Amino acid sequence: MANIAGYKAVLEASNHFGRFLTGQVTAAGKIPPSKVLVIGAGVAGLSAIASARRLGAIVRGFDTRPAVREQVQSLGAEFIEVGIQEDGSGQGGYAKEMSKEFIEAEMKLFLEQCKEVDIVITTALIPGKPAPKLITKEVSILLPKKSSDLTYHR
Picture 1 (cartoon, rainbow, N blue to C red):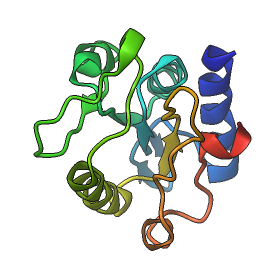
Picture 2: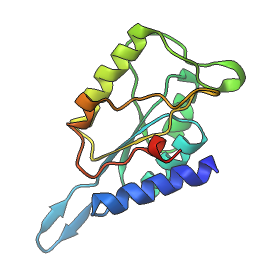
Picture 3: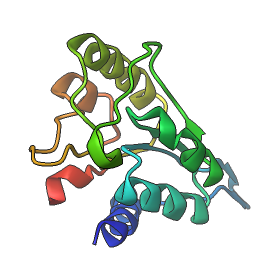
């Protein structure tokens, strides 16, 4: 189901966004490809990254687990990270809760990224806990009006 959720999040976000994710050259001019940020690179996040790339978007991926960097990059996305060396890998390869310092740094990163991207899809989860609130009110003000957050659908 997580694979389908990631795919569906991209389709819904694209529909709400109201234009193609791929760049276009038209008689009226050139339209650049859309920029998509996917937060969380588990099954749903990787599916969202792959789906957005297949639709022609420029994709950035983020995860607290450095081990997924290669997976994100193998799908053609840029892996973005905070400048703090803290491993977010928990038991069984799942994510774990991060330190306050790391969370503050990632919120700053998201704030900067949201100034540049067209769509944000958050798929981050910590097993046995509610989905983390990664898009704060301060950050949401910078988002395009038609962005998508997968955590609202869970």
